[in-house]
Image (cartoon, rainbow, N blue to C red; front, side):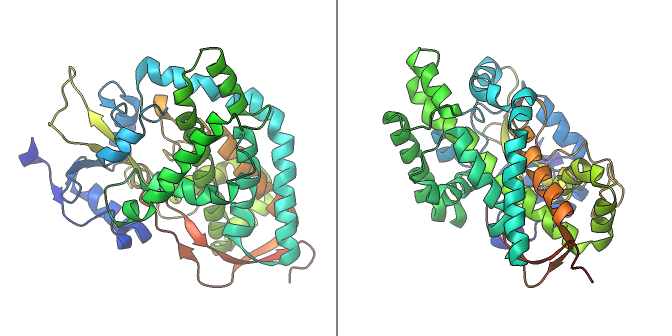
Length: 393
């Protein structure tokens, strides 16, 4: 089989490729449905149909041996929803899923929208803001830790810790090594929170510890499960909100269309996630009859490449909020589809709704900066000017 699979020699996890990944994805898609990554000694799947096939076939492409490209992270992530299959995965997912059902999300919608509007109102008052720090980070960091039950102490480290958790899921490179202490710090703190029963009352964490007390869940599982929901609920949502602001500022025609028809907000979120996918890729092991084939290889599913596959999308590099982008793979697919995607959509839509109501014009006023992370595609800085309603020229 190896002789028929083309090889790609550039490092798709290099600093340059993280900052500008799309030329690499274009070349990978052109090479074939499966491409060998020479640097990572893994198989890349980058076309839409093939990525979707892998994600839906979790009997063949398993997550239980980890979704990272390094054995250390795969070993440390045992006990998480991400790193499990079948009944074990379903059991872990159900433990906290009751807080993320459509019914639960409807009950928290008013609070999320209130907090989102407060964030946008404060930003509009300043007019000149960093779209990442002042808007994109402000809502998830004010809401998600409360939902999970994270104590007030340690919250100043959450973004750094969460980003490091994603970095650890890439290959062993400079990024992984640089952020390793933060990854360890987050797990240690989560263990301390569980040991001290320091979760907030009425939170997902409190539910989890009650289940541990009743024997429904092993207490040793609790720290990993809390991180399982906390880290993804921060970085991916922050990435989506910041990218939405950037794209709407860079495409005045799309901003005008959204202002004219706010009912396009849900589809705008899909189009943002399609075009600037927060998740770059996760890995899988292939398994047939309990035996991995080929021996020792990993399959890397590039969501961000699939979402720009010219075989599926017309003008895939264009930002078009009227495009039907519901089929984008940015939130995953199948049994391992993002459990928190409903909350991510609610937060991002709430920010956009408030921006549409309060802002006449969005302008990028300086050099935006992309962040370095093996897994998360994100902006670090986004200088914006928000022209309030009634003050537009």
